[in-house]
Image (cartoon, rainbow over all chains, first blue to last red; front, side, top):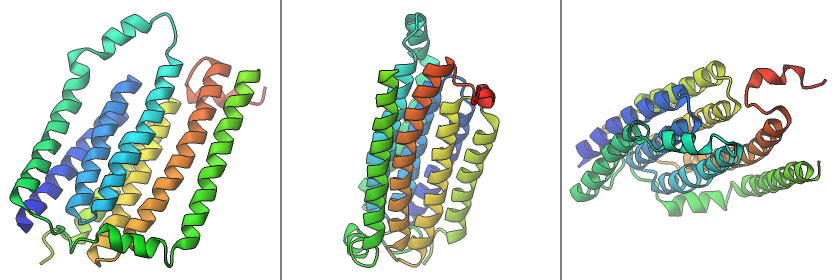
Length: 169
Length: 102
């Protein structure tokens, strides 16, 4: 049971490192973002095998979901030129998505294997579930939560201000 | 008992951080510089979660949540700046910012 988690940790770690290396060396921004998504998903599997399911879920939802969507929106906004069509054709070529697809398939096979084997304990130590995290987060770390919310509010105001100024000028 | 030693989790975090740092120094495309910063933050998060998992405490995961909030705030402002920069300069080359005051 623990051996399955251990093997899953190392496979996901290798996938994370490989996809990160590929992400920072791509020439086209969208290719880099594809590999970055795979890297975040691999790190999520690493978190799961470490016995941190809540953080693994948040990694998928916020990093691979929200932040990467922000990046993709910016890439879409910046490529409104005349070369759109040929660029699009280039993006959809087989070589672009083959690498991320293979790496994601490795991760998917790993997750299916873990679920099928019924391994629930973490590879490093015992699982720390969402309940413990929530109790600590809204107990001793309450001030941190407040500060994080103010930071996010500031980021919203800042981003709105920057795009407003752009629209005016 | 401990199938995966803590050091392996920390090494993974270190590798991710180093890769992000390498990307930050290598690339001149501002978008990929931001991507590298995300990778670095992620590496730091891996180290936190690994350490928290070693002692079965939730503190490591909570630090990761704060890193997540900081990364989200940083990325939203940075991407807004990036779009303005592109509209101003017509390029994402970081070296074009050399003459930003002129």
